[in-house]
Length: 279
Image (spheres, rainbow, N blue to C red):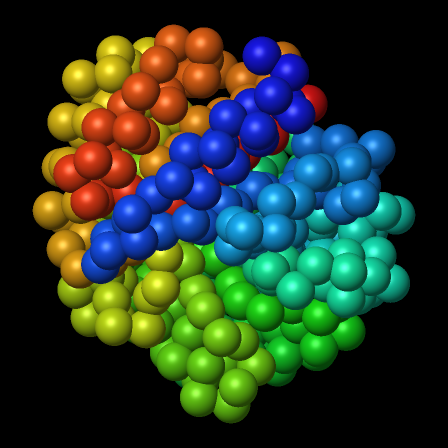
């Protein structure tokens, strides 16, 4: 299925959601990590859907040939040629329903070098993160942050405290208006520790259902309900990975993703949909 057809099907489903406490007309797309050619203007935007572009990624590592941790001093690792301040300001001015988030962490820095969450201390990491991200957010007209660390050199409790304090301080200062997390099964301990203490400042749960092995429709719905229980009270989104380089996990559109979402929609549980594009 071509990307525009996928988006059309996604928007059609979201447009006909009954917006109760759980169902939401929210669409989110990670952009900037896998291709230098993607432009914001290439993506069809439906004005009736709340639309979030998520810049992937900002990482607290040096951006050089020998990357090393910087203890909360974030640098830009997304492709900025087509995703710079000017392009972001333009797409937002043309589409009042568009918001921009920046995702922190991700799987790797460069090649096989993994992006580890490795704070020297909670206090210093939070101070550095607030400072560096505030500058980045203001320069790039960003509205929110997404937490996507997938490798850790610290305990779940320290991760929870660092990230929880970061979100709280950025929200309190008015720097961001929303925050999300992007967990998957193998890293649940860190994200559930964060959710238990700071779930009240987290707006969306971008659970990576495509990190599972290939799922049937019934398996996807069952796993969605398990994660809805884990992140009780949170706005949980359905997800799939799209593009030729994907690993084929989870449930893809050609295999019944939208059937599963319709079932969740009928149950009043669908908090939106997000896509991770792999080019």
